[in-house]
Image 1 (cartoon, rainbow, N blue to C red):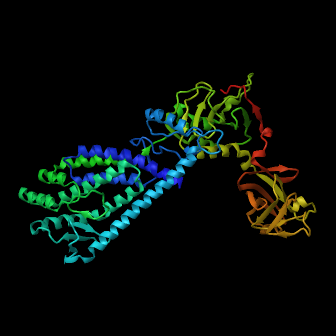
Image 2 (image 1 turned 120 degrees about the vertical axis):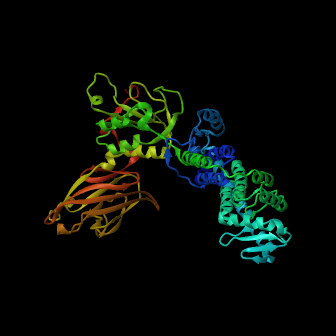
Image 3 (image 1 turned 180 degrees about the vertical axis):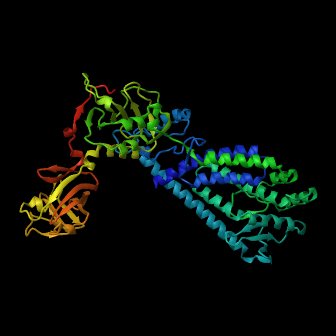
Length: 596
């Protein structure tokens, strides 16, 4: 619920900038048709209900995500308004008020935001309740309405003409309406029906219900209702002469009512801004073609600028570091989990490196600090041929991509001039890519096994798996062949078997004719501590060759949550990620070594 609440808040903030732009355009568009102004409100509506948008270099939205979901977990909670001046003013206040206390186990925002989410939902419920009750009250009052003709009804409980209904809208008139005014009134209400205003106004209120906490949206809804009425007036009077305009204005005054509350429905003829509407009717002149053309063109530009999100910068574009080229030339990768001890990867994936440098970051720096002593707990070092040449110094050469402890900030050091720090738009994604790079040796490792059932040695007939971790039992299931427990009584074989702690897990194709062995066989392992499943992993046995009764397999992990597969004592051994040693892949203690 907190995630949904923050999503709505971010949409509301983006829409607020759009609404302010509409207010400005309403002033500029005083001589343009009012239907254009109504369409501008449609852009605000899209912003209010659509959580996604394409990026554009000409977007005028300062920030697509002002409040990140990670703010609840951040040690230094901040917002990104898109304006450094505002950020510099408000973020110190947020830090002082909501920064987590080391002595507490929970971040203050982890309490505040869920509470605000509950208030948010309660507000929606109240608004919807008000809407339903208001609608039912109107329907009850109209129960005695009398059909006048077509879809037009009259009722003694109606104070002013209006349209009611979604599927089959009906026009309701008071019994005491002046015969002189009735023609103009009906023409106006029919114009509402032709323009589908009986749909747009309730939709606007429904959107307002979602964004009830934003005062600007209440203002926007009032102005939307006013612009709908003005657009409808123009549709009716566009061919009127001065005398007919005067009669229409008199009808407005006669049918006007005093409404103190915003209503969802009905669309009352004399409901909104009667004084302004009379002035608009009296002064109305059909706009010149060029005015309409310019207004439409400006509206299109407005829509493009405010329906798109600002294009993010990317790590690869940080201060002209040319990281895309560096990735292509990279021949060796090192990484650090503590900012000091660097480990070399035996293998690495350039696809992962490309994902890393393609991560979205803020367009503007978040500080003016270029110090090499900044927090850089998680580091990826990209090394080209020239960086791996022998040197008389104990230096690690390469381009370092440095993340802070929660992956919310990044900076790059090429050994010449460190960049400034930038905000990472999606820290969770950055962390995931970093882990894929750091864990590449384990996840990419492939092992080979020769299956020879005619030989007496067990290792030729079945593949053994060990588990170097704490657990109570393991459940193993295979898609082909059988699991085998040589350490249990009777040495059972089955598609699914349970293995107690210390028992070796075996899998065998159980096939005397190799040609019958499928290309892919899967073995799924579930590791338990009591009744709790603590790990799971799926291992692929890919048959790469078959000769008579023998076959060769390539073994590798398809998916795993926290377990790595290594070779140990002739068996495949699962180890926990946290216990997997990096000493065998070239750990370098660089605590006092300058990276350049």
